[in-house]
Image (cartoon, rainbow, N blue to C red):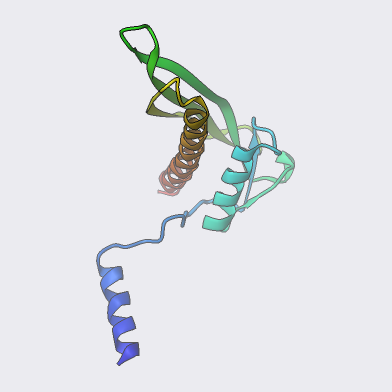
Length: 164
């Protein structure tokens, strides 16, 4: 009976189109990441996402790689959205801009330059500065995780277009 229930659940999940998040079909056996320091948290998150979700291995030497993910821009900005009647900041907008392209070992463009822009609004209270700084750091980490997931989905979608 228990086996039947597990089998039924598996069939229902497969029928509804369920797919595990983080499973990516990349056409490259090896990939180099350039333009971001290899001791950077973003580098580790991209590398971990690629290696955990696909058969692709991230290599340090671009000569050993079939393709290279070239990070062209990786910026974070913080701008004021609104002020109180006394001229104090009430809201900030946090922006993350990430531009990249993928080239093969010979420098030929495989995926054209693309950009991911993420924005989050954050309230601010100058009586709770430490709490708001911690909240901002948490939002920045969440934005970076979102950035990596979007990047991996775009790499997989772009690689499908290369195949087809």
